[in-house]
Amino acid sequence: MSTYAVSYTYTDDVATRDEVRPSHREFLLGLNAEGVVRASGPVDGGTGALVIVEAESADAALAILDADPFTVRGVIADRGVRQWDVVIGGLAE
Image 1: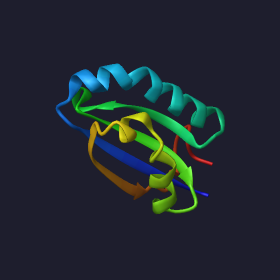
Image 2: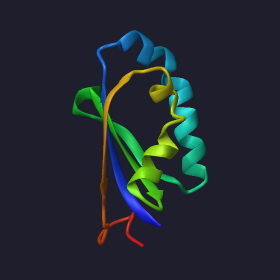
Image 3: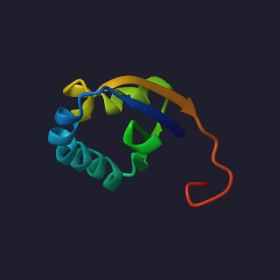
């Protein structure tokens, strides 16, 4: 398994994002309990987010997050993924 940093950029649809946020967080908490999502949270004043995912590949990391209610409801304008080799800190293995 490798670590991937997945970035979200949100649409301007704040109302839908606010409505879906509880199920979005529940989804990510479930993945966190499974050890798949290592960390997650908003960035840039809430205009996007960063999700740290353990996966076999970048494509697999994105596929895992395809079921995120934010993705399903269309409040993510853009997603990016980068492999991240953590060598220092709490996420280092």
